[in-house]
Amino acid sequence: MEIAARAATARSRLRRWYSGSSIERAWRAIHLAEELLVSSAPDLPGRLPYVRGVVGRKLDEKNPHWQALDPTTFDGLDDATQRVMVLSALRAAHSVTDDAAAAVRSLRNRIILFGLLLLAVNLTIGWLTALHERMLPLCLGQGTALVCPTGGSAPSSGDVWWLQLMGVLGASIAVVVLLLRSKPSVVPYSLTPYQALVKIMLGAILAVVGVLVLRTGLLHDPIGNHAALLLFALVLGYSQEVGTRLLDNFADQVVQKAQPSAVTP
Image (cartoon, rainbow, N blue to C red; front, side, top):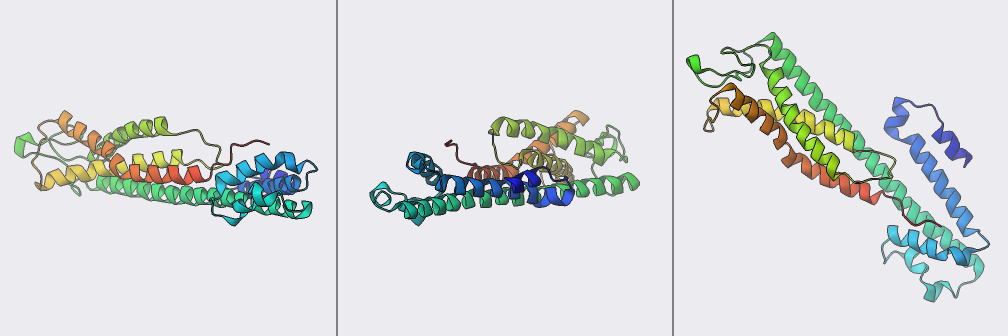
C-alpha cells in the first residue's frame, strides 16, 4: 500500500503521464495487496464467492486457474493448497485487468499522436494558403458566378480557414453523439476527449478535400451559392463519422476489457 501511495502522490510529469507508470504501479500494488490479504485471510471459505466472482469475470471457463476453483475439486484440497490456488487465480485475473488497462493507455497515446498529426496538417495547409491565396483552388463556379468560401468572388487567404471551421462545426455534432454514446467507466484512462480531437481535426480536413473534389469536376457540382458551399463543408465535416465510428467501436471494446470486476468483498 505504501508503493501505491507513493505512486499516486508522485509529482505529475508529461513523461509519467504518457507512460502511465504512476497509475499502473499503484493499481498493481493494490492488486498485489488484495491477493495476499484474501489468500491469507482466516475466513477464506467465506470469501470464496467473491474470489470466484472476480476470477469468473476475467478468465475464460477453460482457464486452468478458473477450473481450479471449481467446488467439486477445490473443496477436497487441504488448506495450504486452497490458499495457493486462490492466490494464483486472483493474480491471473488481476493480470488480465492490468494488461487491459495498459492496452487502453497505449491506444490513448496512439490516438493523441494521430490527432496531433491531423492538427499539424490543418495548421500547415491553413498557413500556406494564407501566404499563397491561389495555392488551393477552393472557389466554385466560373466567371461572375464564382463562389468562394469567404463569400467573395475571388480567392482569399481566409478560404481554407473558413472551410476548416465549417468542417469543425460539422464534426462537433459527431462529438456530441459520441458523448451521448459514451458509458460511465472506472478505467484509469479516458479516451473520449482524444477521440473528439481526432473527429474535429479529420472533419476540418475532409471539408477542404471535399470542396477540392468538387472543384475537379469529377462530380456534378450542386453548389450554386455561398450558403450551399458552407453547408456542404459542414456536412463533409460530419461525414468523418463514417470512418471514426470504427475507431469508436474498437475503443469501446478495449475499455470494456479493462473494466475491473464489479464484485465487492
